[in-house]
Image (cartoon, rainbow, N blue to C red; front, side, top):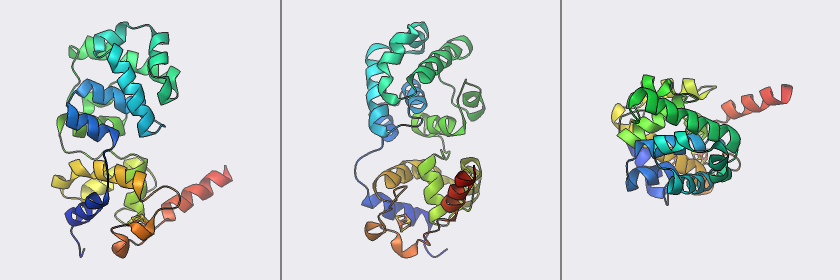
Length: 223
Ligand code: SF4
């Protein structure tokens, strides 16, 4: 390709402002447990809600032992802002208990052990590797999946395939920064609806391929 992947990421990064929540947590203090719990709380909610729920929770309970022993209804109240608070409260309590029982209260630093934790999928496991341990991985959330397809880096129908395709395509020394940059890019410029092409730093090289999203829309309309 004409422009290196690292150059494209540089261009996008330069145009962004502020930090996404996990990035902020990772920079302030690399607490793998907080990053794991925050990633679980981030499912289907906005960064601001995740941030508030995480900080409220950790002000009271900041270790696996404290969360495992906490009353689930109190946990629900503390993380209420993150949405789906009943499911998430049960999940973080369960994960905390497994960490205590199997990992001596520590968060494991490898993909397979992270994936063995209750309710932890590939995106969460990869987020913990990248943001807590600085281990090269590509967490594929909705922003990474959407943008990678729009800019023509991949042509995939689900995040699992996107992760694999990106790993085949992008040099390993760029993996760690990709999620951080694309999450913010997806929040500020390459929005899910009405992307701001007019201020996009890579507009000149973007094929604006929306085929993945159109196929998904059609599929939804049929069901
Ligand atoms: S040109 Fe538009 S679709 Fe392409 S990356 Fe920029 S905002 Fe997204």
